[in-house]
Image 1 (cartoon, rainbow, N blue to C red):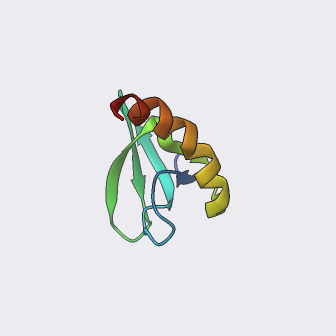
Image 2: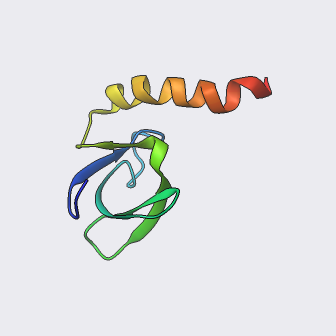
Image 3: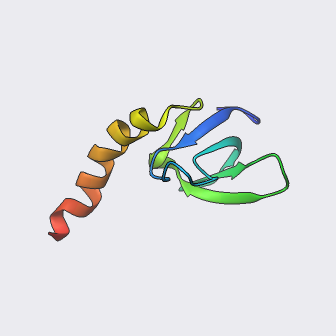
Amino acid sequence: MKFGDKITNVCASENNPMLHSYYVRRSKNDIKCTDRKGNFWDVSKQVIFLGHLPYNECEKLYKPIWKKQYDKLT
C-alpha cells in the first residue's frame, strides 16, 4: 500500500465512518488511516483490505477473522 490508497476496515459496521478510509502509514501492528477531513486513527492490519469494498464483501472477509479470534472464547 502507498500513501493515499483507498482502504476498507472490514470489521467496521455499515454505517461506521471508519469503514472506508485512506492509507497513511504502517506501524508494527497497525495501519494509520484518515478520512481526508483531518481525522486519523489506527486499525489492526489484519482487518484492512485495499480498495473501498461493498459492505457485503466486508462481512465475508471478516467472518474468518472473527472466528479465529473469538470463536475459542465461546
